[in-house]
Length: 272
Image (tube, rainbow, N blue to C red):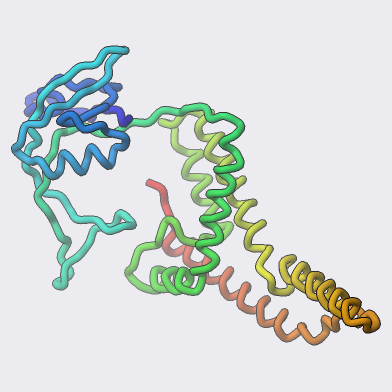
């Protein structure tokens, strides 16, 4: 259930619909017009589509359930894309749309998770890294377009150690976040980095470990087939034949690293 937070106002400013209806910081929105609410996105979608239409909000406050009615104001806001960037029209001007507004914002709370949630979280992290690797050519093209052009960096795209250091420094310097949460975020960042390196290192190409594993599996299959057919052990494969491929992989990895480092310097990914 999403909860409300308030923004500062100046004396004489008119009350926003949320404040006028009596919503307070910490209220948990459980339903709008009788429909259960499970996420902040659901609140936004409902409010934005109901400008000048009264809505019944059901909230939890200090263990009690309270209902209140408010009417979203019609306001104009920028249209954003999937990356949160302002969308532009064919003429290059920012696109806007008219939506409902009530003057409330979401807040979050830290909820301790059970030990059983660790493995699913690691699995989700691995899946995300695999998705990036499978789309790595296009991702690198996007990074190059952002580094050498006007496009913005994808915050969910690949970054270098320079980018990781920037994000870590950005989090560590925020005084409004409790120290324990900063430590938790940085620990998670380091864990995610190690998982990413682990998954990337399993790509079946030399000189990565995945290449050595693939070679060992190939040798094992050769021996198994030879034994199955009653032939002598064919022996180890000649890795010298793979040197050109290894050098090509090293060159590609070097170019990718240089591009990511350059992009993280000239157009870094920022969280705020």
